[in-house]
Length: 93
Image (cartoon, rainbow, N blue to C red; front, side, top):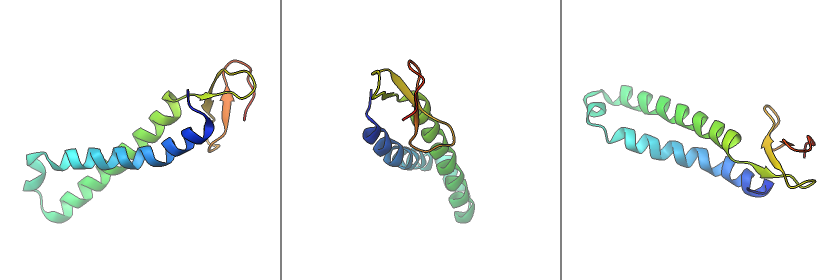
């Protein structure tokens, strides 16, 4: 489990790095190069946005933070950035 600082760093740096890697891998596909340059950039932008949103959701849903009160697993509260709710004791921090 991560502490809240590690989770913040992962949620800040992880999604753009993941999205950049996915865009690079998508650009390696041969059929992309048959598109015009503007369409290619627009398609890669859409791929980047979708990969970023998936990575942000994955960090929020899969990486738990240790609760400072009981040591249980806490997950980020939807809509409240960097606020976590413990599944064991129910406290938010």
